[in-house]
Amino acid sequence: MTRLVNVSNRVAQPRGDTPAGGLAVGVLAALREHGGVWFGWNGRVVSGEPAGPKLEEDGNVTYATIELSERAFELYYNGFSNTSLWPINHYLLGFFRYERREFDEYRRVNSLFARKLIPLLQPDDLIWVHDYHLIPLASELRRAGVENPIGFFLHTPFPAVEALRVLPVYEQLLRAMGAYDVVGFHTPRDLRCFNDALESIGGADHAAVDRRAPGKPHPLHTDVFPIGIDVEGCQQLAMQTGEQDNVQRMVHHLHGRQLLIGVDRLDYSKGLEERFRAFSRLLEDYPAIRNQVSYIQIAPTSRAGVRAYDDIREALERSAGMINGRFADIDWVPIRYLNRGFDRGTLMAFFRETAVGLVTPLRDGMNLVAKEFVAAQDPEDPGMLVLSRLAGAAHELTDAVLVNPYDIDGVAEAMHQALNMPLGERQERHQSMLDVLRRNDITAWRTRFVDALLSAREQRKAG
Ligand code: GDG
Image (cartoon, rainbow, N blue to C red; front, side):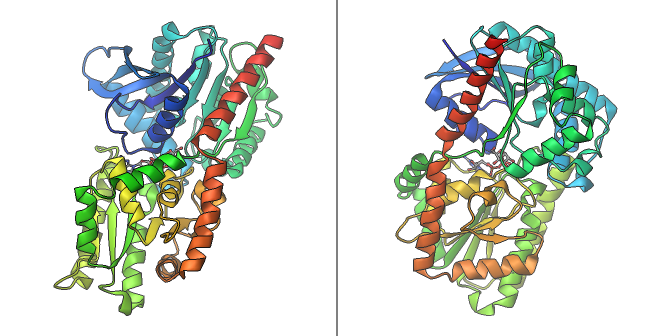
């Protein structure tokens, strides 16, 4: 029987609430529908020898999780993955740092993942590897003789080659990608950047990377697979949760004001400081709007302990305090900044009560919040999305109010435009965005990727 084996750095806990993170949300939704195995780290860091894999069944999904050592957590996860690759992939080179020992540990952890995964594999399995933490995984598996089809999907942007060249080991990583059968990206732009990068190392036709990768020579299939969402699921959650106490309390405290909302992992790539400044500019430039709007920013902590992430948390607290200090009134607080997570149902119900959704990352692979926000709206009276052109989602949601997140005046204007958009225009734009979401939902994403892996299997069989 063909099983789908998903591998990602982090696995969501079975039966736990889905953590804040697009990869976990996407993989879980795809797996619940199709069934299969999800292999990866359980989030625990240990001082001794890491244990695992531990197997747990939940419905049609088997979770196979391992622990990480303190050293791996520091060097592989916080280090090379999140301080070298993450900033490069988001063109935020000011945050980039490189240490050889971190890259060495990154390779060691990829080989550990391979060793722990191999005993679980069956000959007919399709292996789907997710994200930048695990680029060399296929070459490690091939080296150990694994001949199953293996696909790689990058959830972040793929950077232009001139940004990539900042990384001393970029050629090594590109060549390692040749060990995959299928490599997928969110947008045509990412794919173009990948092809340019291959060309820069002499492998435009993919032949150079193919030949040098371990394992049997095979073609490398690259394509664009924009991730979607479970549209009906979001709609239902939004409607069902609306009566919950915390949603009602939130609505009560609005006192009829228009709500702007942002929901993002606390990450410097999400453009939160710039967004706060734009909101402040809105209040400054359009004084009539003061006391008529309320902005809630939900930002659960992510990657705590990494310096840049601790810094941004402090910067946002300061900025929210300054804006509230400057504009608040006896009966009105402009920004409510909540540095914590909420359950998914509450988020969807909040979205449905919102006049303007703010999704203004400085760069994003896709951004699922943008899609969830649109899906959760009441089609009779939909809220409007203000969306960064630098998010992958802007390729599909062209009827949002599109902005450059660095243009503070432009974002303030867009907020004003969205807050004042006539009902007819909101309905039209919403309908067209909903059509886009329905055409390319989470099932389409998973099916297209699995089909590509099945074709790779046929090609392998054909020799
Ligand atoms: C990466 C890429 C790409 C957020 N706060 C809470 C919460 N969330 C959920 C959202 C959404 C997910 O987390 C965030 O997904 P995004 O796509 O917006 O962003 P990343 O985490 O950076 O995801 C991104 C994605 O992978 C998928 O390929 O789109 O570009 O960076 O689903 O709703 N969920 C809960 N509580 C929260 O407080 N339950």
